[in-house]
Image 1 (tube, rainbow, N blue to C red):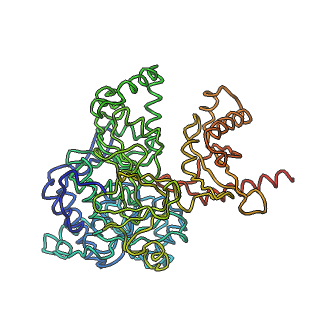
Image 2: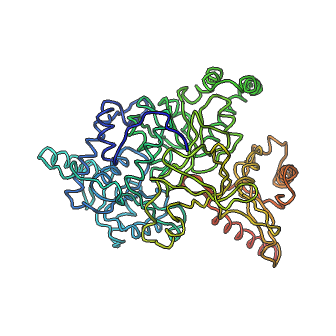
Image 3: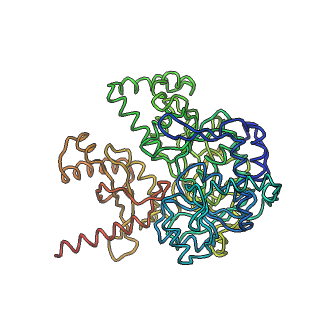
Length: 580
């Protein structure tokens, strides 16, 4: 595991975190909100904590003490204040995925037994309907957008005003509420369909141990600016973005959308961002495109080699103009939630961007391991954070086995599901379901999901993620999906196939071809070139091409089962068309 590299503030629970960080950083700006172009509203850390106290007091006043309360909506300060007003004394918070379709949202409201829900305008009609239909225990709707109560709906802003008045009148119920750090306080749904998703039960202890671990290994302080982009319901953004920024007294700014990330980084002088590989790939392509337009790509490539062994500080000075494309102030980029392609990771490092990979799961609050300035290897997720132990069990001859972890960040249970809990929590160790190898220095390298491994007739294992990383390097291929296909009645007769999502314009311009058939031929030849670099048993036997994106979660993870089902449907439809 990593050693602690920086001083950190000890905290007992999230309420204690708000108190201590508020006393230390109260005058610092917590949120900078864009009102209109070049006009912003600043909210200090002191004011944020006052709003949390006021809202929490009002929630108790309307009878929500000890109740389960959901939060759903786009990333904004009202979401974060609602979350903390629930979890710091009122009840149990249930963050919900903002991308859920109506039927799944209602299903989760019922399963989580929430009695109230904070929401943004987009969800008002659905939630009014859910309340009217008597879905689950839902009684109270709280709008983040309304200014006043009306039509049986509370307004978060008016509740804050009411809570402020109650505090002035001496109501101390919320402010003095005691927190049991080991009690279930957060319920999170794992990704997947509603029937397959599990409910992860977390405590204040889980989250706070993770916050202090992260703070002790990452160089972040109250002068930093965090860009909030990933959905807040996801534990990666919630812990590493939202809660960590408040813990460190930093400033949070909210992204205007995926297309605006580079300009927002420039606009707000962002210094820290936690995001997924797809975003870093997107930013890199933007940088590459700018350099191509300037006719300077070859010059930059030569400089990269020239300064390959220089320090990160020297590289940043050499490539300052590239840093200026995204604001010039970036000091830390954290990639998580999926595997980052090694080539992209190396490119950022060569240009002087301190990009590190982290790894975690909803069940581990989430961070298990992360690269740091001191402990870093390309392709690795670093070493475990200080409070966490890890082992690789049931290793194959290559040293690859299942990663298991132990620490105070590991969940309490899958709520209401003893069978699944017993499967993953064994003798105090959480079985991640991820395959990994660990080198002699303790650096961990993730190889893929245990359940995704394709086992061939000869007993060899294929890791789809490894193959996809190779395919995704091809010019014009935006993403790919590698899968096993049964080729005969023998269920063990499996061959490797790949579905490629391509950009027609890029492929045609790069390879000087036109039309679907020519595109197929050129990409198929590129796959053959990849095959020639690998053992014969890993060879990709066939490809499917599409311009439609793969089915993914809100954090850009490929939904493998959903994509497999879609491929099977497409194949069945193709057979029917042939017969017709």
